[in-house]
Amino acid sequence: MKGLHNLKPEKVIKAFERAGWEVKRQTGSHIILGKEHYPLILSVPVHKGKPLKHGLLCKLIEVSGLTEEEFLSYYK
Image 1: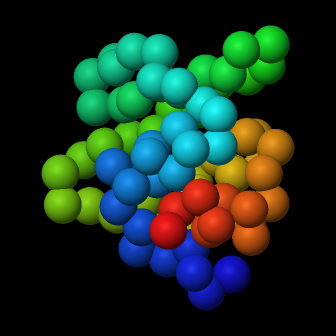
Image 2 (image 1 turned 135 degrees about the horizontal axis):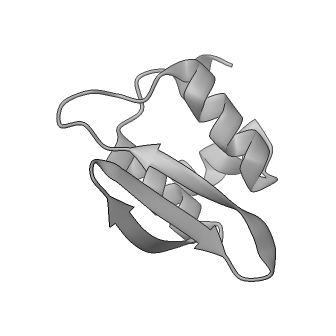
């Protein structure tokens, strides 16, 4: 999907927070997000000045249980 390219990690994390995920901890340069009563976690790499790669972002959205359209509605 065209809207999922060159997204900043900080804004991606905020979008997941709006979708009900919360930051649990930071391990090195990765922010770990979790959701109550949901067994999986999201690990978002935050490297200054570098956007998330398209494939990684698609996988994070899939694991979160959101569709790409739902994610983009939280991203704005």
